[in-house]
Each structure stands twice: as structure tokens, then as C-alpha cells.
Length: 539
Image 1 (cartoon, rainbow, N blue to C red):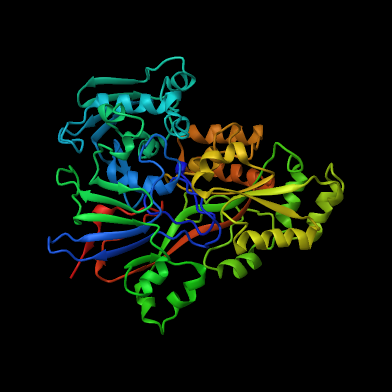
Image 2 (cartoon, helix red, strand yellow):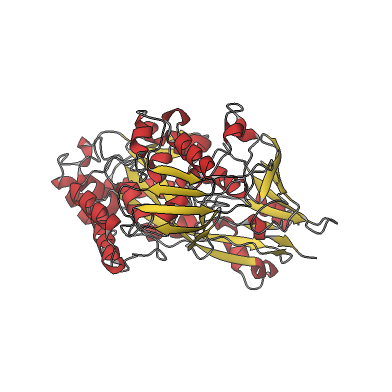
């Protein structure tokens, strides 16, 4: 998300239409609003209209935020995919073999997969796509995370070679992939957009090739008018479940989705805290249209551990103890999301209900500051929180946390805003002492949270947290074959992260959506995306 991965997050309640890789938006809303509305067509398929802000890119190798990934998932495909139950199932690869040492994967591709222009997809196309993603000239921010286990990936990333030695094309429809270490989540990584196949002729046609992508997915890009309109049309030649819709029309920057829904112009809308009372009131007919989807996501404030004052663990712990999360979430979010004491969401394998969090305790916070190398609040340097947004407008959530620090510690925190669309792309370079961040799972494994976000030197370890003991545990867990023992190691690792206050966890995600009864088959997976080819409009 994702950022990629996650993908990434919203600076409000985390919501993703499409992948979850990672999306960072303004905290002016408690829910990222990505709305859908539908109209009837005599063709029998119908048109689904979506209100959105549009993608930044449709290049699977370079997208890092969920806004782009949600479109990419409709247009492109990979070898495997995660179904709605988060199980790995075939996609372009109809089957695969795994060697006894779990280091060699042999994928057998379907023979009926074609790009949108009718050209067949072969194993060579995957080798090209991965080599391109890893090539430093592509400037992918995700390839080093999701393709790094393949033998030779590091050499391509460094620019030493352009050939990925761990991938062998045995024939047009057989691909052999060798990985450096046997890891149980390798196939999960192959379901992430960075591993999707692209057409070399399309990519080499020009720098903005992704404005006219030649994908493989259930939808083709028909037109794209920046900040106005984006239209996807049904791909009649799709090898999988063909779309039940004729078109999906994204009306870009079309206004307040909840107001459009109430006026009958919008048929599906995400619900923010301001409207949650309306949507959950049994006396209101709209409550019958409410759907609540779980989300494998966490939102937190990050500490820049490489710079004063958060280079001192006691200061990080003090700032964590000084926030009454339940109070802030009640006031700012009307309790529509659960407070987080740790990193792993409740439905994630390895979730630890007995995790010891840094609970609200003002006296403990003041004691920790006194014990720190700074000695007192008066010795702390200026502290700035980096966030996404415009016009000095921050959310009630962030405002509440800043007020907690001022009231309980006597510390003043100022805010610096970055453009929300580019937040995830520039945060590593632009972060101040504090920053807001969040993560929605790209696959259901603790590694996707704990290792990607906190292992020393990893790209998404934005705060520069460094703990050799943690690194050793994460390295051990990544290759542990016993599932129960592996989850126990991850729980121990999570406890270290929380104890060291690597970040300040705030809440776990949950998505509230209103759906009109004639829109059928719309469902968000726990990763936060919808399979639009499964959606239909009923009379």
C-alpha cells in the first residue's frame, strides 16, 4: 500500500476501494470518502458510477497509495491473488509446484490470458515486468519490499545488472522462481500489484504509457480526463469472471458523497463520524442500508527516532503515556473505531489480546521525562508534526492528541502540512519529529506489519526505529515453519515494539458504508478493496 503497500492509509478512518496498499489523505475527514453510485442501462449490464479523486498513476510498479492501487486492481493481474477469505488462489498461474526446500516455485500459466489488445501473456512478460520494477530507473518504492526475496533482486536494485537471475523462463507458459530463503508468505507477496504483469511494448511506448494501459484485468481504461472523469469498460475477453457491469464511471471531484447519497444521486457511500448517528439509528430507514466491513489496518503517530527528542526511548514512552486514546477517539470519532494498544489488528493472525500497552498515565509520563537525558520539558527542542492537508486544517483526532500533550505535559506541538496526494511518496524525506501514518494489510501475515514497518533499514520504517533484538526475532519468525511457534515469536516482537514506543498506536480500522438495495455483490475484503467485476445492478 501498500503502500502499498500498501500499499497505505487515510489520515482518518482507513478506507480503501481497491487494494490496500497504503493511502495518506487529509485528516479533515474521519473517513476517507470513496463513493459509488449506480444507474440503469438497457444493455443488461448497467453502469456503476463512482465518486473519487482519481489515481496518481496506473503503473503497478510505482503506485504506493491505495487511491491508485484501487484502479490498478481492476486493470491488471498477477500470478496469484487473495480471495475474499484472504486465501491464495490461482490467477494467471493456474497451478504451481514448490520444491522440497521451499526455495523454488514453478508456476504454470494459463494459455488463454491476453492483454487488452488481444496479445497473449507469456512467462517472458512476467520476467520483464519484475526486472523493470526492480530496475532503479523505474523508481519503484515497493519493488524492494515485495520482490526482494527473489534471487538476484538486490543486484538489479543496485544497478549492477538488469537481469533477474532467480527467474527462469522454462517455456512460454512455465516460470521458475528461486528465492533466497524459504518464507511462508512468498505467494502472498506475489499477489501485490508490484508483481503484476505489464506489456513491454506498452511500457516502452512513452513515459506516460500508463495513461493508456494495456492490462489483463476484467476492465479496460476507456477514457481519463484528469480531475473530471475516468471510465472503465468491461473486458469481454477476460479469462476469469467477466464483469457484470458494462462500465464503471468515476466522477472525479464530484462533491460531498453523503449529500449526494441523501439526495438520491449516489448509491453507495462511506460514512464519516459526522453521519454515523444517522446511519445507525434504527428509526431511520437508511440504517437498513448500512454495511460494516472489518479492516486489517492500524493508524498511528510515528516518532522520528533518529532526531531529538524522540531519540530517547523515555521521551517516546512519556508522549505515549500522556494520551488518553479513548477520550480522544470518543470526541473526534464518536467511537466508531476501536483504540489500538498494539500494531496487529484483532483479526490478524498472531493478534495478542493480552499485549501490554502503554496506558494513559500522566504521572508516569512526567516521571519518564524527568528520567530522560533531557531532564524536563523545558529542555526539549521544538516539536513539529508532519501531516497531509491544506490550509492549516487538521482533524479533531490530531488536534485532540496535541491538546493532550499540552494539557498533560506542558508541551506545544506545531503542525506542518504536505500535499495529501504526494504524502506517501515524500514522507521519508520530509518527516519532522512526529508524523502520522497507517497501514492496511497487503496480505494476512504479521510479517506484513511488524517486519515491513519496524525492521532496521526497511523503507517503510519511516521513523528509523532500530532494535537488534527485534531484528533477530523478526528474522527468526520469517523462516519458522511451525505456525504456532511463528505466531508466538511475532507476539514477542510486537511487545518489544510497543514497549519501546516505536510509534504511538491510535486505532484499528473499520469501514462503514451505505449501499442501495439494487447494487448487488459489493463487498470490501479485510484488505479494503472491492472486486468490481462481481458487482451488478438489479432492477
